[in-house]
Image 1 (spheres, rainbow, N blue to C red):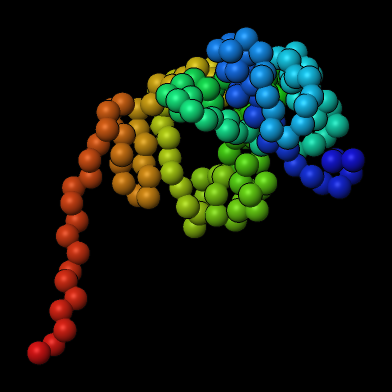
Image 2 (tube, rainbow, N blue to C red):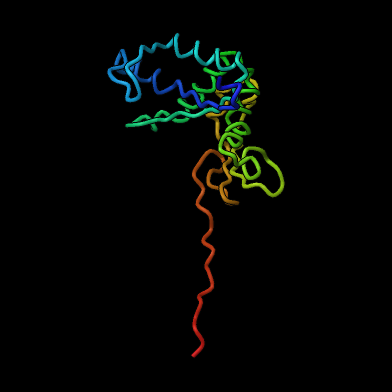
Length: 167
């Protein structure tokens, strides 16, 4: 029915994987009392792909889990690969497809003239090895280098002209 109606999904398997690993099981689920497992969640992702449902990549990290980045995001991409996407297809799901799901593909998702762009440059070939995404060399955000040579870069201060009213 999702495919028929053009409804997209952002499956976010990684939170459950973290819960299973840290707590051993799911104690509660806010949206329904259903049975979930690592295998069942992966099977759901495979079924989404097989049904032709557009899938984006996300993490929904809570608590202290943001500290697991970028590993958690890389692992979510690996879930897609395990479910049948190629590595390049998983990267497209994380960028271009996510922008389409947000209805922002005219502004985000691909490197094109006129689009907003935060650029991540890594040392490696992430289209072959997703682990290379952790080897961040350069990040450009809003036109400024914020990571350079793998280290935080603080842009030079650009003073703004004061708006002074005429006497």
